[in-house]
Image (cartoon, rainbow, N blue to C red):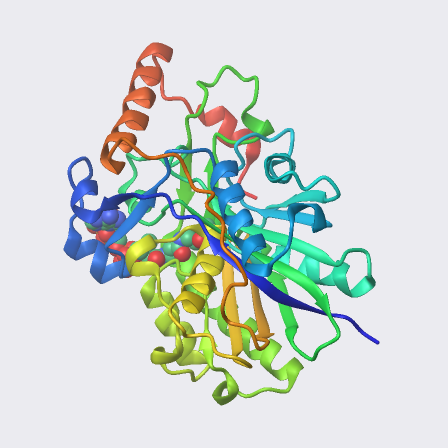
Length: 378
Ligand code: ACO
C-alpha cells in the first residue's frame, strides 16, 4: 500500500525585534502610506541570531509537538536561500544542535518555495520507504544581505523561521498532491549579486550585495504562476475551489495574494494572512503562516489546505494537504533564542554602517560592472 506523508508536528521561531515602516523611513525615502498601500506590510522582524539557531529552535518545537525525540529523525531538510555558510550545509548544523544522530541532512534552495519543495522531497522519500520521520524547515535571514540603500526591496523582506515534522502514515491524509514548476525565462527578474562563487575571491568587499529586482515582472508572473499551479493541483486531486477550507499562500505582497485567490475563486476570508506583520520571509513565509493558522484554530480536523507559492527562479508550486485529526501539540519544549538586547533599527543601522565603511575603504562601488557582465543577463 502507498504510504502517505502527514504533518504531525509544527513550530515556529520568530526573532523578537520588530522593524516598522516608520523605522525604514528614518533612512530611506519612503513612508508608511506607500508601503501599506503597495504591499499591505506594516512591520517585519530582524534576527539577532544566525539562521541555524532560529531553525534549531523551530525544529525542536516541531519535534516536541509531534512527540518525537531527536534520535527518531531520519531526515532534515533545510529550505532557505540565505545559508549562514555555503560549506558545510546548514541542515547538518541543525542536526548537530538537535542531536539527531541518525538523520540524513540536506539543504534545498528554490528561494521562497524552498519549504514546499522540501515538503515534496521529504514526502517522496517517505513514500518510497527511504525515511519515516522527517523535519522540514523554512528559514530565512535576509537582513544581513539586504541592500538597505534600495527602497524598492528593503521594505519588502523580513527574517523568520518555522518547521514541520512529516511522518509516514497509512491513514488517508497528508500531502495529497502538488504542482511544481519554474518560469526560468524570468530568472533575471530577481537576482542578488554579491553572494556565491561568482563573487568569491575576486577582491570584492565581503558581504556587499546588490539586488536586481523587477517588481512588476515578478508581480505578474507570481499571480499567473500561483494561480495556474493552484488550479492544476486541484484538478489533479479532483477537488474544487469550494472544497478548500484554508489557503496558506506565500506572502510577498497582499495585492498578489488578493489577485491569486480571485483568480481561483476562493474568498479572502479563507486565506491565512501574515504579510502585514512579517513581510516576505521567503522560505519561512508558508510554514510560519501554517503554524499560526494552527495556533489560532483555523486548521480543524480534516481541513483541506491549499498552499501556493513562488520565488526567485522564478520557481512556483502549489500543494494540497488533507489535515489529520490532531490540531494540538502533543508536547512543548523550553528551548528558546537568547534574549535580544538591540532594537531592529539599531541592528539594521549597524549593517548599513559596516557596509558604508567597507565601501569607503575599498574606494569604489563594490559590484564592478565587469563582474555583472561576466554573469550576463541569464
Ligand atoms: N517607497 C516609496 N516609493 C517607492 C518605494 C518605496 N519603498 N519603492 C519604490 N518606490 C517608487 C519607485 O521609485 C517608483 O517610482 P517612479 O514611478 O517615480 O519610478 C514607484 O514607487 C514604483 O511604483 P510601482 O512599480 O508602480 O509600484 P508597484 O505598485 O508595482 O509596487 C512592488 C512595487 C511592491 C515591488 C510590487 O511590484 C511587488 O510587490 N512586486 C513583487 C515583489 C515580490 O514578490 N518580491 C519577491 C519575489 S521572490 C521572493 O519572494 C524571494
